Image (cartoon, rainbow, N blue to C red; front, side, top):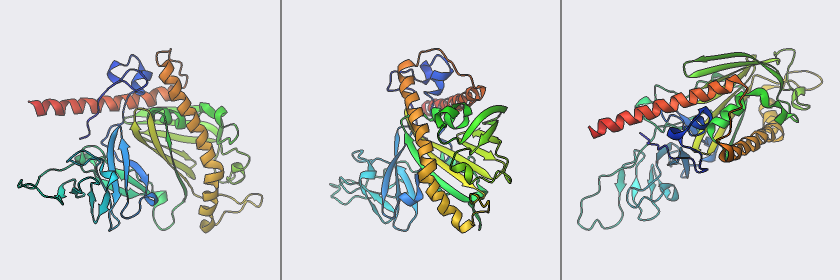
Length: 371
């Protein structure tokens, strides 16, 4: 199991155990490792290629072996602790760049190419992680492998089968704590930030319901009101005056009348860096003016254009905002709490509770090892 500490954040803000209020606690909390987290777009990892990713400060080497299968092991050579992601893929194994020590996909040392000096072959290994590919993403389970079938990758039937919906898959890495990003995508009081693109406006909170490890939220709001994007939305066939959202720990989703949906999966790289993987998917769109359905074969091309002209610039605005929020928090972490949206309070309480659960579990494991 990955072990985390509770050191103060690099900014000087208090760590989780030293936090004095909800805001300080949530901005120091990690995400529970016993869940699946996307770490890379599948298309970005070619056979024979290895990349470093991080989960809450711990480096993981993710590579595609020469058979095309993705593997993930701890990113360190057990010899001199160099990052294995600096090395090369050999068949199904990963080779350290320094002395050529070779590790299998289970993390076990399988070959040492130099003289052993009369010593027996070292029976050592590094950690290995369950890994899957789904929805065009590479997913890693960084926690207890025995839990990988308990907390499964979310089911998104609209993206599977013979007739999947059109989808925009986009990711971004922001210098901000993961909780700030969850707050951002589920809190529609920041419409002013997006006044140019108008993805939503005039939002009124109509539902707030915490249920277990989920927080359900609904808004009456005008969806897709931008000057360009609004032309493609089928307002006669879709109720674009309402949206349901959910923070389903540790990810988030939204649903507009069963026809326009999205998922956000966050990868907590460290205390102040997060990579967000967004999947926006659509049952269909309309041809402007003539109001006819865009053919399925053409829909994906339209969405690929929209990704660069509309969705990425829109998300860039969110990125600028959450990075500025992180910078502000680093300076003014001791200032008075001033949150108005009750939904945000519940998002933060859920994140805090799950991190407390993880710390309690990790503490029990340490005690049992000592005893």
